[in-house]
Amino acid sequence: MASVPSLASTVQQRLADALSAALPEAGPADPLLRRSDRADFQANGILALAKKLKGNPRELATQVVAAVDRGDTLQEIEVSGPGFLNVTVTDRAITETLAARAADDRLGVPYNPSAGTTVIDYAQPNVAKEMHVGHLRSAVIGAAMVEILEFTGEKVIRRHHIGDWGTQFGMLIQYLLEHPHELDHKDGERVSGEEAMSSLNRLYKASRALFDSDEEFKARSRDRVVALQSGDEETLALWQRFVDESKIYFYSVFDKLDMEIQDPDVVGESGYNDMLAETCRLLEESGVAVRSEGALCVFFDDVKGPDGNPTPLIVQKSNGGFGYAATDLSAIRDRVGNLAADTLVYVVDVRQSLHFKMVFETARRAGWLDERTQAVQLAFGTVLGADGKPFKTRAGETVRLEDLLDEAVDRATAVVRDKAAKVGLSESEITENGRFVGIGAIKYADLSTSAVRDYKFDLDQMVSLNGDTSVYLQYAYARIRSILRKAGDRVPAAHPELELAPAERALGLHLDRFAETVAEVAAGYEPHKLAAYLYQLASHLTTFYDQCQVLSDENPAEVVENRLLLIELTARTLQQGMALLGIRTPERL
Image (tube, rainbow, N blue to C red; front, top):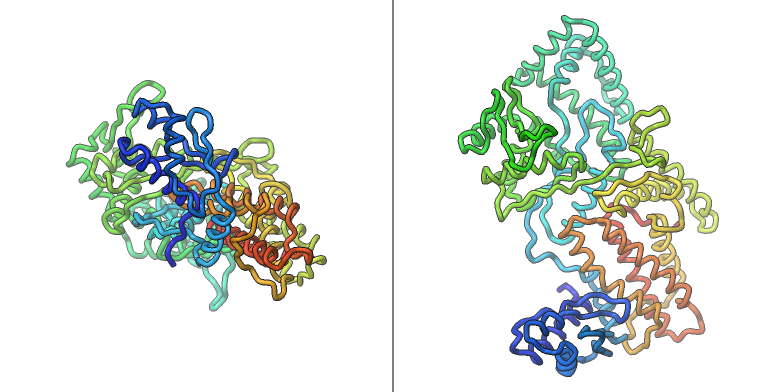
């Protein structure tokens, strides 16, 4: 189905046509329309036109009002202040627009006409290491942006740049070579993520203890790093066992997060090994990078250390080893050259901003990024504890991500169970809904905060039925589904001839904003704006319930059907919006 024009776009076009008709000397002009608290919309563009035409803005505004084709859309246009236009749309226009959205599978959200290919780099755990709370934001924010961009028509390629290379693997591989059964599984036995991580932890601690106490083992481990980097088959086979065991663990954690990770999307640091030498050669030959004290470096005028001297991006160390920069630059070459990406999005901690600023600028100087291909860091802040400091256990250790998710599900299940008797939920529904509510609570708390800001992790608040939480939105959705089940043979239907109550108008006008909100969120990589929209939608719904009964026998059938249309469209918008954030909406809560 063709996309449904929003009321905002219809009003914008009517005013633009009126501007051209009333003030042809101004040429094509933008009314600068925005949503307003004083009316439904306010147009501010006439002030700028008045300066250009050297005219009185109120007089010009009056001319424009006289030229507007109101049709069935515009109820009132009032000149306000120094030349603003306050615009009120008709109830008929609201209902007809909502009916068109309700008839569309995509709720009137158009595909982006300039959609291209985006590679999103997110969810980057490290091989042979436990995932902790610091891995949460990259995974949750990245997964939401994947869903949002794909919904707008973008081709999205997922990339999980796992830490699967480096000197620590010499120690691990050498230990496994000398203790070959440490990662063995019984034939046909399915290993859980917890068991896989337990094996890796045990092996890491044992190999570290030997490395620190045995000089000969330490020497063998360092030789093993050389063998790994030179592609020795036996060494690579053992390295692969660590990667495979770690994936069992990673995937179990992502499964708890209700996120799907596909094997082909996991391209770690090792995936770019064959490109590193060429990346360095291209940078040196083009003069983008220069040798400084034996290292290959890129310098920047605006990046200086505490001593005031330039701080370079080191692409290759003086001993010939490659740093993160070489891998990140090689990844850019691959993503632009082989994957044909128009946009590269990196969902990475804000503390790495300087590194990525230098990497992106180096890639631009080398010609791997240009005006047609951009790279963006979607930087995120830190998860804080209740004390406002980085989230730690009471013992001062980093919080394991699995423990956090399990506790959220436990708390949420208690909340669900508390109300389960009223709804008649079975034990299996309580368990499933507890998972959806708990994981949704964590995701929403993260996504409802601007990514770059730190946020406090407060599980009690996250699973609260009141306030700006996912549970509030999930209950709003479930309540609508309950009403629709009770409606019996009364079905949602549009009645444009009806006058709308103030709460109906407010809810309808907010529903009309869904498409523009999705477009804004996709363009700016700002999922928190979608979360804010959904919370406001649920708040409008609460006001609507207080003021407008839906299934009252005292209401004419037309009023009941029109209100059923309103709440059904609200439910579908909540469900679609939450799905874009990676959050489930149970039918009964």
